[in-house]
Image 1 (cartoon, one colour):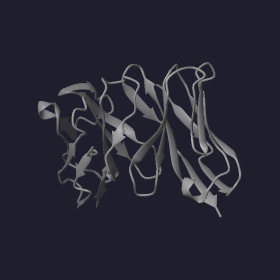
Image 2 (tube, each protein chain N blue to C red; image 1 turned 60 degrees about the horizontal axis):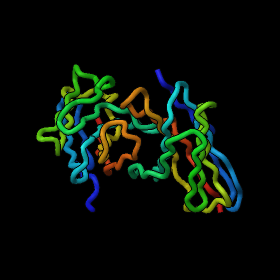
Image 3 (cartoon, one colour; image 1 turned 90 degrees about the vertical axis):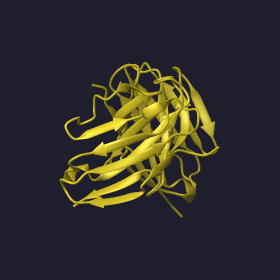
Image 4 (cartoon, chains in turn brown, cyan; image 1 turned 30 degrees about the vertical axis):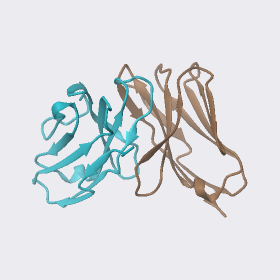
Length: 110
Length: 116
């Protein structure tokens, strides 16, 4: 069964610093998704990565996908408080089933 | 464009009672998903519809959970009877593409269920 693991599970960082969240998955998948969830809110799509080597950037966030290593990264550049949230990656198992990771709870300190 | 609508937003019931959740996806979206998100965990897919047909329900506890999507639009998820471990947020999502088509899902605000 496909497993999706993220690390770290919790991350507390200072404003202005850089950091990377990692998403590992256990079986072949060529599509990976990143979502953001604010406390008590629903999920908001950030990135869809559809091929090996895909890189997407939006503001201070950049996501990449290495399908051979079964690894995606979400890089945060010069963090600001507004980025505080929980970040989830998700992959597709087989043809249809979306499997979400454990989530990384990010807190950016002023 | 209106987003995914869900109701109710909150529900408190006692164990062994029944409960139903309703979802109205974004207009024209072919695929609809129901997820269960337990506090501190990622969403777990319960069931996935394409139009009014079930694509995947392998993680739906069929002895107590049921779901339907009549006419390929709205959907309801029912729990009967509820257990304490069903306390969670139930998220509905939709996508304009066929199941697994590679594009993103749009999530509703969720229904927060507490079973006492």
